[in-house]
Image (tube, rainbow, N blue to C red; front, side, top):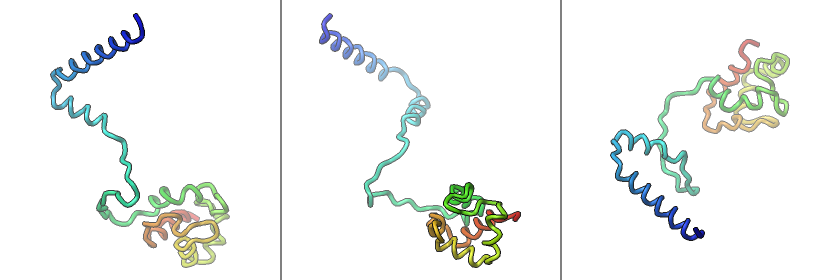
Length: 138
């Protein structure tokens, strides 16, 4: 059988299979399950055309939450001189300067640390809670 006949046969076999599948009795629950499985995993928007989504305010995040989302990458390992979480040797000289200085450095940025540690939607109180989380027990 030459190549064109094989392609035509494959086309008609696919057509027959797909039309048989379309006429099969599929319950609404099965159809809904299939539709759920083939949903896209994300959306792509051009800059400025994103849909407006109102955020539900659930209250301030606690220090552990802010730390795990924004601070742990640097303060967990001491990247670029960041004081490591719970390390008294790293934190003692900083704590000696006072909480106002710690808060100012964290909120406004200091050395390699960007303002608010890149958490631009964090409130000042959430940043301070993250500091307190990092130094608790010292």
